[in-house]
Image (cartoon, rainbow, N blue to C red; front, top):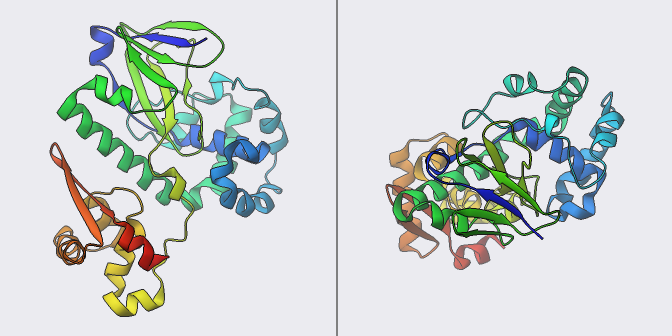
Amino acid sequence: MAVWVRLAGVGLARVRFAYSPVFETVMAVDGLRTPGAHAVHLPWVRWARERAAGIPGLDVLLARLEGPVKPAELMPVPDVRVPDLETELRAVPPAEAEVIRRCHAVLVAPHWERITAVLEADIATRAATLADRGVEAVFHDLHPEITWSGGELVLHRKPEHRVDLAEHGLVLSPSAFCWPKAWVEVDPVGQGVLRYPARGIGALWEDRSAPQDLAALIGRTRARLLALLEAPRGTADLAAALDVTAGAVSQHIAVLRAARLVTTRREGRHVFHVRTTRADALLG
């Protein structure tokens, strides 16, 4: 049993990347409802449970999320790469929109910068793959349940369904809180959407603060760089996270690379850095 998504011609040319603050918030709430199904987020669940108790209307939203099929009206397709929360909420029924707004402010917004860093890194990596090796290579590497065969994207999961996006195209939407599953809109009214777990989710809730003894040894900025590089990240992304210039990041990366603490790879026009197992041991 599988969901077959047909992409050809115009639809294939309209494949793009985007992520959704509304979807992340809704799936975060679902993670509170069934934490065992989203085990990678248990550190967040422990943090969020007490805070969620005081959110008005949360029980109504939790009730709507019961069962394996989630209401499409609570998960609008992002129309731009990074849609604004309020813009997305205009497409959600007003009662649920207000609850989602509260949930985002209390449960997701405090971690949004950390979440978006992972989502942006995923998009950058896959965009580079798209530029270098084409859309087929991107599809083959999205998720273990997803394959590309004969012009169709196949999600190997029940129930059986066919979706024709040959005219409308598809949004590939990395997500933090959808882990471990991939999700596809089975009855889209326009452009379809495929949500999949972003790379680096396993390290999302790790303590990223640099150990004081490591900072004393190699310097605070370099220690923080290593803490940030549990997943591949670009120079500009690191510069923004550290509030330093891209040139300064490049200089620190060069020193860390010479010490075999960081590796750097180029994917098309993009350059990504990630820490090595030797650095993992130092941070250990």
